[in-house]
Image (cartoon, rainbow, N blue to C red; front, side):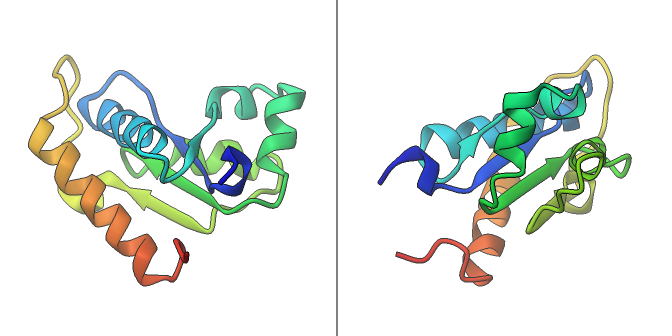
Length: 125
């Protein structure tokens, strides 16, 4: 399977523990070949090749750390709506500045996201 056959995953990567939890989940999805991670900062910054990727028609998973939903907003600037949007505060992931992500919360949220995507027949063989 080519990388372009995978859905694209975008994540928050701000300074809080919730943001870094989102980032770690997206990295894990990329490394485990569940999705291809792309750069949301480039989409929000109007970087043409990254905007083209976002607008390519591939399935999109957006993972935000908190209700500010910066990832979803960056995509919306270019009229792109993710097929799957997750806000980690909905999974009881706390937003704490100056704290590293909790590895148990990273794994728990990752599993919930994978299950939610599977339940939507997202990752069909």
